[in-house]
Length: 287
Image (tube, rainbow, N blue to C red; front, side, top):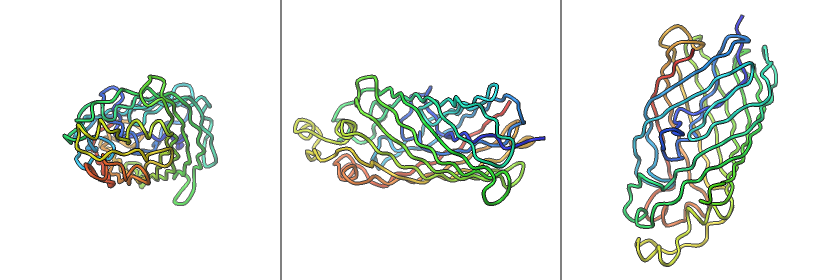
């Protein structure tokens, strides 16, 4: 007999191994059906279009990779350039509440490469941030449509340990997903990001020298606070068999809005846009 395993939100835009911009990390996907008690591994690849930097009004197309799985009841999953491990063994066998908790490691590559705007590029490439931290989440299985739909609330916190922004980012997420059949799954997520003052200064403030070389206005107002919020939609359809195994096609779209001091930064207000769009298509295979 099959069951719906503990939710493992992942992204269709993972770029951890492919050095893609960090915007890809927030496209939500929800774990599908797996055999009860069995280990599994899902791998996915495709393409996704994301802003060339956070706040850009021009998108780039990049390759993507997704990984998720379970070994002896312990789950792992990717979200963009981040890898999460759940250290609480999965024992859910039907509708109910489940708790997840564990470490997370991520690479932030925003404005390290692939900057399409000449003025922002003139500010210089930034360093790669390596972020370590943890996450905790609560999932309710069997909510509205059936015993298999899922509502999840999760928060993760990461700190840069590589001397780039030398700060933190906190990401609360709410997700809902439901299988429409054994072959089709749809989901939605709402995401926000709260960042520290050094993060805001590193990515969004512009000193006098930077303003001179770029032609952008000097800016020093960006400080700790909510940087952006957005919504993502996902659909997955099994091409061979059902969602528990074999090949599936995945499509995602997302919209984000830069907030507060961050949308007023010249890299957004003068060179970019507060409105951010992402979209991706890919294939996943579950073993």
